[in-house]
Image (cartoon, rainbow, N blue to C red):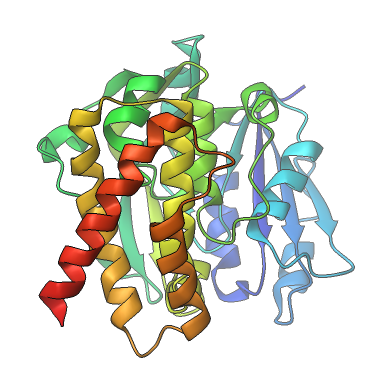
Length: 320
């Protein structure tokens, strides 16, 4: 049985696949299986994937019908995984050859840790490096992502994850399969923020580990899911849902609620004012802010909703 299952979920990333797969097969830590998924790509992905079929570490799994969901593919891959640990290596990213050598021992050093992740570098479609990918909300400790740490998952959610997804890229994460399954896997109803909710849910089961060495290369290009969905405001409404879900799971002091509200309102108002966002999405944002969702949100979250409404009105006034 391998120590780690590496899952590559692919859809139309033929131009990046060879580098992705080659940097997995070249890992200095070699105790892994590699599961290559394809979600009915319309480019040359499948012929490229088949080039690796003769490697005994490789398994090919091709969908006959497009799933339409990144997170359905994640869940499928984890179901197929045989190992204790899992690495979801996105098909357009690539890795330093020491990523597994560094992260597997980090995760193994703390039995209560749900996952370990490393710092990521930004890389363009034509392989130009563009600095680091670190969380961007107005945290007071911006240097936090420059040093290794082990954090209590509940505290991490209260202080950081409730404001934004502090794990920018799945390709930087090695996690325990058992914890992924315990929390129900990725939420397939979410198009963009399923990873954010997943990392928070897993963090709440114990601890998380961070390795500051930049061993992951997170690629940005025109065909990414994030770029496409952000143009229609999905990130705004889903971000609100995930923030409220985290608050519901890990209730935070009211004194800290306002610091969560400001960045949320800063996202919503430009979306509502933008000519590129559909009317239906704008109405959905306003409805979320004004009414909230009483079903998954306990009374402890109601003060957040009240504060957000006031801040939304303030921001609306300021931009008019």
